[in-house]
Length: 116
Image 1 (cartoon, one colour):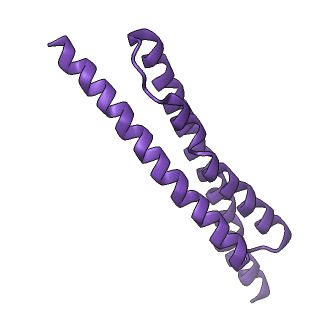
Image 2 (tube, rainbow, N blue to C red):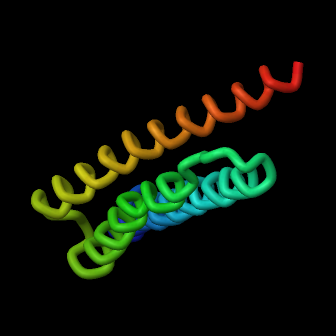
Image 3 (cartoon, rainbow, N blue to C red):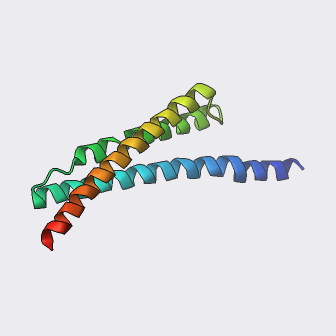
């Protein structure tokens, strides 16, 4: 019975925590690459793309991942203040990333319309 509980704990808690941290890092990396792509558009087409926003906005996601990893490593779970702070940062990052992506989309659509 104890071995089964330990196995289930490993699968449902430990493994899901590790996957959650890895997913957060991958999401942060994707947005940074998106910002770098936007910077290349700015250099090539000499049009402002606000690439700095796309590179800096996902910092909240990275901070959340750090808080989450620290909480899982020390206590096994996030405390309520850690959870509130982390999720608040993710929401702010999501709003800023969406704003940056929409600005970049407007630039690319303008370039596309100009080519026709």
